[in-house]
Image 1 (cartoon, helix red, strand yellow):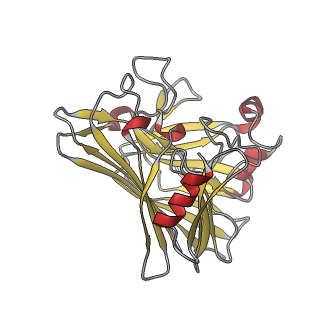
Image 2 (cartoon, helix red, strand yellow):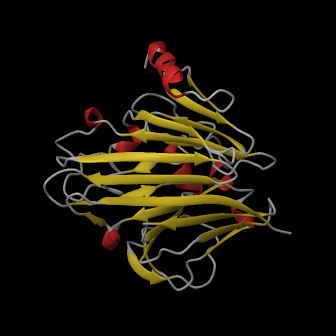
Length: 305
């Protein structure tokens, strides 16, 4: 995008002292939010939240120091949007994994300074960013991000066409943690999950999740809050969701992280864990004609002793 776009964005949507738009050296346009509660950077490519740093807190969202920030490239870390399918496409392996939305250009359509000091920005996926061969359905897709003491991300899909369609989707959120040895994830005890590391066998979670090897699990039929209890940072991160019936927990561990090449260091995987709010597998969503579906997640910090 050219500087003219940034200039126009600032003229239309900047909020003095809270929100401004810049362009990074790789050519990505960024929405930079700084308010009394937190700082956040969001790129218009993918409407992708890259950082969320509440005042007085360590970062909540993990962004790899080796993330490739370039047009058309997926970004390692932050909150990638997987839409309109999750994982591999069901019938065409040439289509991009996790859909096209995470690397497509989005537009800013609204911004607002809220009365509590938070900042809200709304992105929309333009029709020009939707490849008709991959997604021939008429729809309106928005990502509404609110940065305050908490971060709220709401992915909204509206069916504006004449036929029902199904979507798979995820907020593929990477969380910054002290160390994988220092965390436990609660909220999924007793839930069934599909174990990708274990040949997609269906299993049942028993107790809290701890990580000591590669973990890639799709928990189904659950709308529960999840809590990342991080004893190293003396805090918990709460993931409270609505409109999501699946949760993915992922850490690539040593060998897979090394093969990916954008985790930053040999130990980059130790400082992150993904707890993703998802609709996938048997929990894909049917969006009827004229209907709207919302995937709404609130991310907040709870201090622990």
